[in-house]
Image (cartoon, rainbow, N blue to C red; front, side):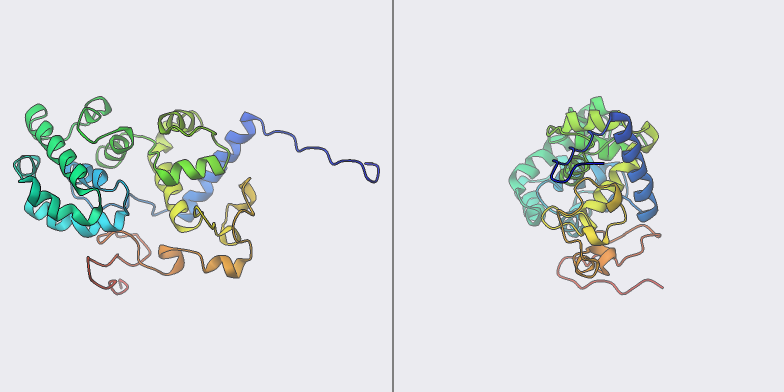
Length: 272
């Protein structure tokens, strides 16, 4: 029995084994919440995914998806894009922001694909990271979703959530990637990335997470940082969780939400 007025004992630090068990349970819970989790960039082949991922820096996937139809209509192959006039390319991708730097990267990677890889996107991370504008994050997106090679994609949402969940304290994306890879089996890496990003975009927001509407709240050491009232938390939900369109104009068939609107358009009606 603790004497009245005695200071409460500090909670026992979580062991690494307990953290791994909790992390894997969160992953299982997220798999049930988001069985349809997928890359939120529209693409039809590895080249389109590579280009879209480069364009997604410092902007939303929705803005990229609204921009790439015109881009790929004009330049459907690396050879076509490599021969593009910089001013014309810049004008098409202007809505994604940082268009001059992105245009330079797209021209450089397209020329490298044409000259060094026979016009094909390589399926090895060692080759992908030699392309202008392509780092490990972009390479893992392409490998995991165009080639079926497992990888952890450490974007802003992923890094934020895994630190919020105390899976890692690292800030450097490569160190985050290495630590998370050590927690989960390789077969889970790509889908884990999608699930965590989905959760970060829909429920576990940066500034005001919807704690009261979160199914994994009992497993979250940061519970209470956001809105805990269930009714108020529901109003914070985004995309299909909030009854709103997603980010893809052409989502997978099993996506339960609305397709995103094209540039300047309205959201598409619900699918029958």
